[in-house]
Length: 196
Image 1 (tube, rainbow, N blue to C red):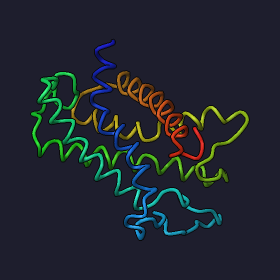
Image 2: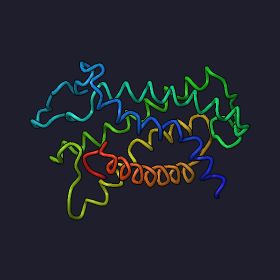
Image 3: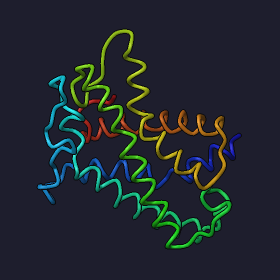
């Protein structure tokens, strides 16, 4: 079990680093025109925004570029340290530049796209962007906020390595737990407005 969790973390490293650096990237003034909301400010017939202001094209593109970059870097590290056997992607596939570019792009896509349904749901429930609810549903939405992107990232892993449903769900739990810890650290570093 410990080896499996270690493999999860080694495989998740590009997504972890991308999540951190994407927050920094989104706060910079560089490429300001990309700060436009992905829903272009549009509302549905209920009068509510589709995703809200926090889901921007800058963040979306940042996930794609940063995950691709960090997948290539982590691939080089795995090769240099002879730890390819600890990365789910390299169990059945060669650790090559082309493969790392592909999986990096797909991880970024999975990460970004799987955040959108959660934002869509929260807009329908009138939850302020970047906030969570109080009361009975608070724990559910805290978990969902941390796990949504992990569902997408773990799905990409599953495409290249047969995780099975049990290992997939464990991946989501480990990823969500890691996300909570990172969010608290990013909050303390003043890169997030709130820890959850």
